[in-house]
Length: 255
Ligand SMILES: Nc1ncnc2c1ncn2[C@@H]1O[C@H](COP(=O)(O)OP(=O)(O)OP(=O)(O)O)[C@@H](O)[C@H]1O
Ligand SMILES: [Mg+2]
Image 1 (tube, rainbow, N blue to C red):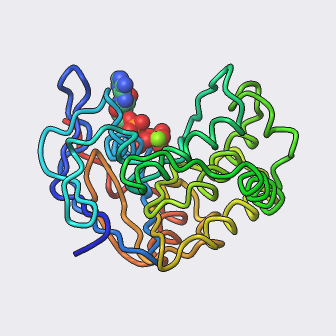
Image 2 (tube, protein in one colour):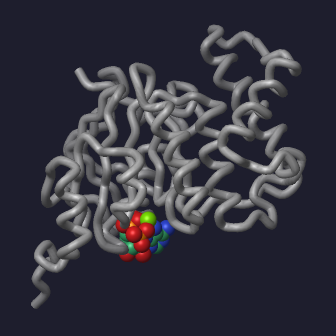
C-alpha cells in the first residue's frame, strides 16, 4: 500500500469539461516523483483536485492516503492528514501575516493530531522554529510580519511556499512549478530545502517544466503528462530527454 495513491483519477471543471482523464500514480515516503508536460495539459488541475479545491470535481476514480479515500474530506482536513500543495500562483491574503498564517496552520494540524483538542504550539518554540527555517531557506525575516504574499516578489512567494512546507512538515508535498521565477541562488536554496525534507517522513510530487530543479532533487520517477494523461514514465534520464526533445512526439493528433 502506497502512502498516496491515485487510481484512474478523472477531474472535471465546474462546467463538466474533463481535464484529467484517468491518472494512476503511487507515491511513497522517500520518493520524488516529477510530473512534466506541456502548458494546459492539466498538471495544476491534478494538484488542485488532490488538495480538494472546490472548482475541480473528481468525476471518476479515487485518491487514497494510507489506503483510505480522501475524496469526502475538505481541503483543511486533507492538510491535517499531511497533504501539502505549494501553489503555482500563490494568492495574497491581505490582513493575515505570514506568522499568524503559519501559526494557525500548525495549530490546526496539532489540534487534529490531538483528537480535536486544542494543543497550540508554545510561542517561543514557534518563533525559534520559524526563524531557523527562514534563515535556512534565506527568507528575509522582514517578510514574517508582512501580509501573506501581499506585494511579495515572484521569488519571495515561492520561497514562502517552501517555508510553509518546512514548518508544516507534510507527508506528501505537491510542488507546482515552485522553481519558476526563482533566481539561481534561490533555486538551489529552495531545492535544498525540499531535498532535506524528502525522507522516511515525506514523499514529493514535483511539477516542473525544467530539468534544472531536478539537478538538485533527483527524481526517482518522471511522469510525462499530456492532455490529462500520463503518456510516458521513466527515471531521471527521461527528464533529460524531454529537455532535449520537447513534447512534440506526445502531442495529440488533431483533425
Ligand atoms: N478554473 C478553470 N476555469 C476554466 N478553465 C480552467 C480552469 N482551470 C483549468 N482550466 C483549463 O484546464 C486546462 C488545464 O489547465 P492546468 O492549469 O491544469 O494546466 P497545466 O498543465 O498546469 O499548465 P501550465 O504548465 O501552463 O501550468 C487549461 O486549458 C485551462 O485553461
Ligand atoms: Mg500549471
